[in-house]
Amino acid sequence: MSNIEKMEVETASGRNFTIYVQGDLTKTDTRAVFLTVHDMGCNHSSWVEFVEHAVMRETKERSVFIHVDIPGQEDGAKDLPNDYAFPTMQMIAEDLVTVLDKLSVNLVIGLGEGAGANILARFGMAYPDRCMGLILIHCTSTTAGVMEHFKDKLPGTRGPSKQLDSAENKERLIKEYQDRLQSKINPKNLRKYVEAFLKRSDLSGKLESKLKVETLLVTGAKASHVHTVHTMHQHCNKQKASLLKIDDVGDVLAECPEKFAQSLQLFCKGLGVLTSLPLSGVDRQRTFSGSSTDDESRPRRQRTMSMEEYDTPNLRRFSFSSTQTAAN
Image (tube, rainbow, N blue to C red):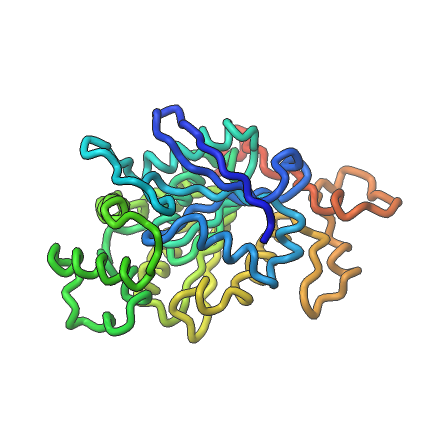
C-alpha cells in the first residue's frame, strides 16, 4: 500500500477534520487532484481501498487523493462531546474549501458516495471555481427515501414490509449496519452523521442553475435508491450532468470497482486530465492525440510531450468568467 500522510485541519468554522493524503502534495499543479468524502458507516478507508485496487494503479501514480473523514468517523474515535453541534451537510461542504486552502490546493475533482456525494454536490455548487468536476455515487438531491441507503448494505432489508422511516427501526438498522461492518467507527458518532444526513435540505430546485461543473452521477441498477439518483439527474442541467447506471449492481464500489474505475478514467479524460492514461483496449497513440488543451488559438506543439505534461490540467478551461456565469 502506498504511503498515506495523515493530518489534522481546523477549518474557518473552528471544526477539526482528519485528512489523509495519497500522493505528493507538492505536485498538485501537475497532477489530477481528487477530494473524496465517504458515506455513512465508513470513513476514508473505503476510498483508500478503491484507490489501492489494481485497476487504479496507473491513475494513482498520476494523481493526488485527499481523503476527508467526517468529524467523529475516524477509526477508534472517542465520543463526540455531548454539547458538540454536529455540522449540517451544507456546513461540511463549506468547510471543504478551508481544507483546500490549508493544503494550498486550488482545484479538485470531487469523488463521493452516498452522504459524502451529497456533501460534494453542495461543495461544487458553492465553489465552482475550486471544483473541476464531480463523480457522485448514489447521490440524492431530495429529502425522500429516508433509510434506503442501508438496504443495499444489509441482506434481508429490501422490500416494502420494512418500515425504515420509524425511529425504532432506524436505530435497529444502524446497529445492524454497524455490527455487520465490523468497523472501528464509533456508533454514537455514526448516529450523528446519519441524523445530519436525514435532516439535509432539498437541493433539487437549485441544481439546474447552480450546479455548473461537469458531473457524473453513478448508481447501480439494483440499488434500492436508484430512483432518487434519476430524480437528481432530471433536475440537473443536462449539458453538465450525465447519469451512469451499472447493470446487475447494487453497491457500486463493492461490487464493480473495475467498471467504476474505467468510468472515472474516461470522465477525467473528458475534463482534460489524465490524458496520457492508457485504457484497456484503447490505442495508446490515440489516447495521446487528445491533448489537455481546448485552446485552438495556440499553435500545435510539434515536440513530444512528457507524460506529466499530458496529464497537467489545463486550468484555463475552468476559469469562471462573469460572462460564463451570466450565460448560465
